[in-house]
Image (cartoon, rainbow, N blue to C red; front, side):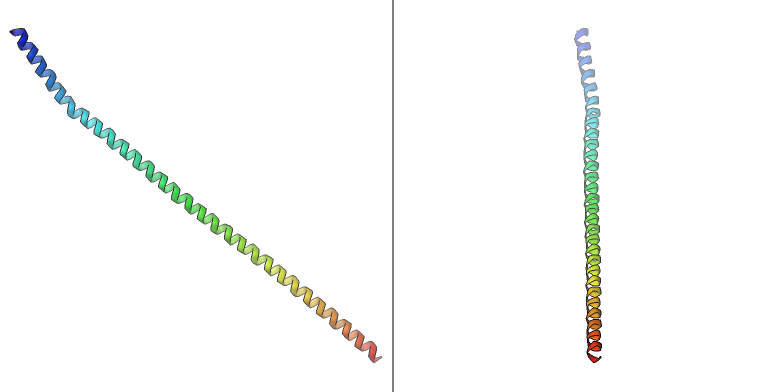
Length: 108
């Protein structure tokens, strides 16, 4: 009988210890779940921030490239216009000089 009582007492103690361990296990599991969720959330936020920064950098690079191309086109157009104007002025001057020379020769 004494042995049976001890067994029962030991079983009760083991059950109590297991009951005490259960909340601890649950707390550990919940803590791990929270840590995993927080890590996943941080990774998602970092990925989103990096994506936004990369998109902004790409947009800025595209804008810079477009501006540079526009500036180059404007410079080329200005150079072409200046060359055309110079050629036209030279041609007009040459024609005027030739006409003046021809008129002077005819007068003599």
